Image 1 (cartoon, rainbow, N blue to C red):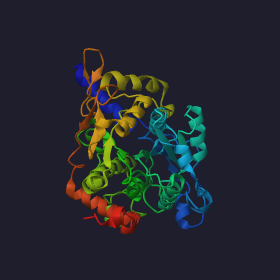
Image 2 (cartoon, rainbow, N blue to C red):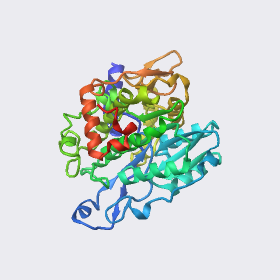
Image 3 (tube, rainbow, N blue to C red):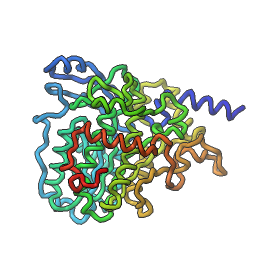
Image 4 (cartoon, rainbow, N blue to C red):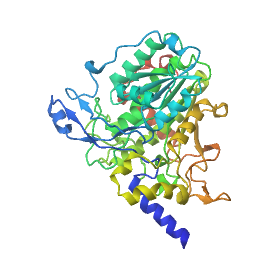
Length: 434
């Protein structure tokens, strides 16, 4: 009976954190626009929750659009140069969404080893500089660079600026971590290019970024790309299979229609914020599989995904009642076994990039059972098997939906078309595309 009660409590509490995955640190921010068109007027009051780090970065400033854009010529960053002197002999790693949450924890973990120079790729460069100082990142261990994943122009500008900064030195590692999570918004918000925000940032933005950097990374020894995944996109887990709604790409009807406003979902159906996030995570993990299948052997790059665990103590719960903020972390620690601290989650993501045992391409890495069940009590009095704190890294299994080879190929081909990625921009001029 006790077990039944705990399982029921799990299912009841999980929807409160929207997906039973890593808890989101979300603050609502009103978008202030300079209205330039009817389209701009229609979105001027849409509220976004922009977060980075697998639902763990809070966007603590207003998102300001100028002439209807998040990124324009006024926000373009002047290229930094002579980065070789600053980088020295360290490995060069780019981390998107590195200004807080999982991204900042991973930045800290890698920077403090002394082996890495981290490019903190963030939309708010002043915030990134401030938090880097606050957490005590070693001097010359990092460089902040502007990246607005909600704009394909910003992504292309970032790649150009990165190449100018590092000169002939190839990029060694890329961590695609930033994400948008908008589970309660009744209406979609749109990227500068007209994509639904969750899919546009989480999947399409990173899809374009990886492809634009692949040729350069192929020149590096031991290069790795990690795109952060989620249990919420895997229907073979508690959070992905038991918590409504489930991820479902349908037949990618939305992408077939061009993926642009007013099309808000990849399956062509009406907007559903929580599902949009989960769908984007399926696309993230499919992208890793396609990257590995198409390019791992020829480029020598190791492509992988990972689930860091449930980060339960975040600012999301500032809006919850006091009893919930006190109970939920303990609930995740001692009932479900899914809890992991932000620092440990950062160490896990850093491990995927740094650990010699993580040199196999196409793997979805997890720890402590990978959240495919509620935790089981062990001799030390802590639940094991739910993806929480502790445990050794292992190769996890993904759901049938994620491993659908036919749909993955279709997703890849349509994503190329949607973001207008040309063969000329791709590795070896797109000659390896099938």
